Length: 146
Image (cartoon, rainbow, N blue to C red; front, side, top):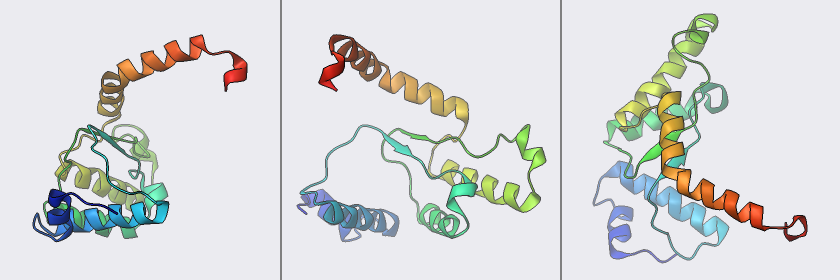
Protein backbone atom coordinates (compact mmCIF):
# COMPACT_ATOMS: atom_id res chain seq x y z
CA UNK A 1 0.00 0.00 0.00
CA UNK A 2 1.28 3.45 -0.90
CA UNK A 3 1.83 5.77 2.08
CA UNK A 4 2.57 9.48 1.94
CA UNK A 5 5.69 10.75 3.73
CA UNK A 6 3.58 11.82 6.73
CA UNK A 7 1.83 8.43 6.83
CA UNK A 8 5.23 6.72 6.69
CA UNK A 9 6.42 8.82 9.65
CA UNK A 10 3.35 7.75 11.62
CA UNK A 11 3.92 4.11 10.56
CA UNK A 12 7.55 4.35 11.71
CA UNK A 13 6.51 5.67 15.12
CA UNK A 14 7.59 9.29 14.86
CA UNK A 15 4.26 10.44 16.34
CA UNK A 16 4.31 7.90 19.17
CA UNK A 17 3.27 4.33 19.76
CA UNK A 18 -0.51 4.92 19.79
CA UNK A 19 -0.51 6.43 16.31
CA UNK A 20 2.02 3.90 15.03
CA UNK A 21 -0.03 0.88 16.06
CA UNK A 22 -3.19 2.51 14.71
CA UNK A 23 -1.50 3.13 11.36
CA UNK A 24 -0.19 -0.43 11.24
CA UNK A 25 -3.73 -1.72 11.81
CA UNK A 26 -5.04 0.50 9.00
CA UNK A 27 -2.30 -0.62 6.62
CA UNK A 28 -2.89 -4.29 7.43
CA UNK A 29 -6.62 -3.91 6.88
CA UNK A 30 -5.90 -2.07 3.63
CA UNK A 31 -3.66 -4.91 2.49
CA UNK A 32 -6.33 -7.48 3.36
CA UNK A 33 -8.94 -5.60 1.34
CA UNK A 34 -6.66 -4.69 -1.58
CA UNK A 35 -6.52 -0.93 -0.93
CA UNK A 36 -3.81 0.94 -2.80
CA UNK A 37 -3.69 3.99 -0.52
CA UNK A 38 -5.35 5.69 2.43
CA UNK A 39 -7.87 8.42 1.73
CA UNK A 40 -8.33 11.64 3.70
CA UNK A 41 -11.39 11.78 5.95
CA UNK A 42 -13.19 14.67 7.62
CA UNK A 43 -15.03 12.62 10.24
CA UNK A 44 -15.25 9.08 11.57
CA UNK A 45 -17.64 6.79 13.38
CA UNK A 46 -16.56 4.33 16.08
CA UNK A 47 -18.79 1.34 16.68
CA UNK A 48 -16.98 -0.42 19.55
CA UNK A 49 -18.63 1.12 22.60
CA UNK A 50 -20.83 -1.50 24.22
CA UNK A 51 -19.19 -3.82 26.74
CA UNK A 52 -21.74 -6.43 25.69
CA UNK A 53 -20.19 -6.61 22.22
CA UNK A 54 -16.57 -5.77 23.12
CA UNK A 55 -15.88 -7.93 26.14
CA UNK A 56 -12.76 -7.53 28.30
CA UNK A 57 -9.78 -7.76 25.92
CA UNK A 58 -10.43 -4.55 23.94
CA UNK A 59 -10.69 -2.55 27.17
CA UNK A 60 -6.99 -3.19 27.84
CA UNK A 61 -6.14 -2.17 24.26
CA UNK A 62 -8.23 1.01 24.46
CA UNK A 63 -6.63 1.82 27.82
CA UNK A 64 -3.13 1.29 26.42
CA UNK A 65 -3.88 3.59 23.48
CA UNK A 66 -5.35 6.25 25.80
CA UNK A 67 -2.37 5.99 28.16
CA UNK A 68 -0.05 6.44 25.18
CA UNK A 69 -1.79 9.71 24.29
CA UNK A 70 -4.22 8.63 21.60
CA UNK A 71 -6.73 11.34 20.65
CA UNK A 72 -9.30 11.44 17.87
CA UNK A 73 -7.76 13.28 14.93
CA UNK A 74 -11.06 14.12 13.21
CA UNK A 75 -14.51 14.84 14.61
CA UNK A 76 -15.93 11.43 15.51
CA UNK A 77 -19.19 9.93 16.66
CA UNK A 78 -19.67 6.79 18.74
CA UNK A 79 -22.36 4.18 18.83
CA UNK A 80 -24.48 4.51 21.95
CA UNK A 81 -23.29 2.41 24.89
CA UNK A 82 -25.36 -0.48 26.18
CA UNK A 83 -27.05 1.55 28.92
CA UNK A 84 -27.64 5.05 30.12
CA UNK A 85 -25.98 5.89 33.42
CA UNK A 86 -29.07 7.45 35.00
CA UNK A 87 -31.71 4.75 34.54
CA UNK A 88 -30.83 1.43 32.97
CA UNK A 89 -27.45 1.14 34.67
CA UNK A 90 -29.25 0.56 37.95
CA UNK A 91 -30.58 -2.73 36.55
CA UNK A 92 -27.23 -4.18 35.42
CA UNK A 93 -24.78 -6.28 37.46
CA UNK A 94 -22.04 -4.22 39.14
CA UNK A 95 -19.20 -5.84 37.12
CA UNK A 96 -20.96 -5.09 33.83
CA UNK A 97 -21.59 -1.48 34.90
CA UNK A 98 -17.97 -1.01 35.92
CA UNK A 99 -16.64 -2.32 32.60
CA UNK A 100 -19.09 -0.25 30.54
CA UNK A 101 -18.24 2.90 32.47
CA UNK A 102 -14.55 2.12 31.94
CA UNK A 103 -15.07 2.05 28.16
CA UNK A 104 -16.96 5.36 28.29
CA UNK A 105 -14.18 6.95 30.36
CA UNK A 106 -11.52 5.71 27.93
CA UNK A 107 -13.28 7.33 24.98
CA UNK A 108 -13.51 10.56 26.97
CA UNK A 109 -9.69 10.43 27.27
CA UNK A 110 -9.64 10.30 23.47
CA UNK A 111 -11.57 13.62 23.52
CA UNK A 112 -14.81 11.98 22.41
CA UNK A 113 -18.27 12.51 23.88
CA UNK A 114 -19.94 9.10 24.31
CA UNK A 115 -23.38 10.47 25.19
CA UNK A 116 -26.30 9.55 22.96
CA UNK A 117 -27.17 13.24 22.66
CA UNK A 118 -23.71 14.01 21.29
CA UNK A 119 -23.89 11.06 18.93
CA UNK A 120 -27.22 12.03 17.44
CA UNK A 121 -26.63 15.76 17.15
CA UNK A 122 -23.11 15.40 15.75
CA UNK A 123 -24.15 12.78 13.22
CA UNK A 124 -27.22 14.71 12.14
CA UNK A 125 -25.47 18.06 11.82
CA UNK A 126 -22.44 16.69 9.96
CA UNK A 127 -24.43 14.51 7.63
CA UNK A 128 -27.54 16.64 7.04
CA UNK A 129 -26.48 17.75 3.56
CA UNK A 130 -25.52 14.20 2.52
CA UNK A 131 -28.79 12.83 3.87
CA UNK A 132 -30.82 15.48 2.05
CA UNK A 133 -28.92 14.86 -1.20
CA UNK A 134 -29.49 11.13 -0.78
CA UNK A 135 -33.22 11.62 -0.31
CA UNK A 136 -33.31 13.87 -3.35
CA UNK A 137 -31.52 11.23 -5.43
CA UNK A 138 -33.86 8.52 -4.19
CA UNK A 139 -36.88 10.53 -5.27
CA UNK A 140 -35.41 10.81 -8.77
CA UNK A 141 -34.84 7.06 -9.16
CA UNK A 142 -37.33 4.54 -10.38
CA UNK A 143 -37.56 1.17 -8.57
CA UNK A 144 -35.77 -0.56 -11.46
CA UNK A 145 -32.66 1.57 -10.91
CA UNK A 146 -31.87 -0.15 -7.60
